[in-house]
Image (cartoon, one colour):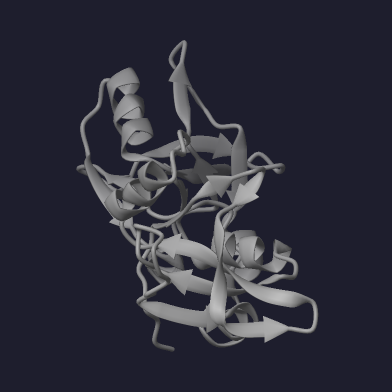
Length: 220
């Protein structure tokens, strides 16, 4: 599956939705066809907004899941996508133009990861940052810490007064391979654990088996 872009991509907020432009080469029974404007570079998106006097900031999308949700919410007359059109607004001149239906069917693969990528584990002298827990039967469990940003990972290390090396997982396949390799050692994954009053806690925790079987899978 080839694609024109890499993430993040940038949309232009406008009028409660996102900027689009008329496709001069197409027309439906309901009138002109509109194309959602998508840029692959933030600087060009900002240039487009400046050209039209828009004061907002571009919205970033980070993965196929977010892009798919956005595309599925579109309604006629916005039935196409223009990637990297001319930022001057004088002509379309898009680097790539594609129908929304084709984009969803042929170029996007949605996964169910409960986080956006990249995520980070922290390697230490022995193993990775984790939390010691107790199962329902009183058995000891190891809960791996996984962080959704570098800043959160570094904040955790500072609060715990520990050191470690951040290991970046950039997509579903890397996360699945990494967690599968730890399946004999780790029972669950804590997302963005914190240290407060010498206690290591997390608001969101997933059993490893549930992650691998339910969330870290793709919608083909």
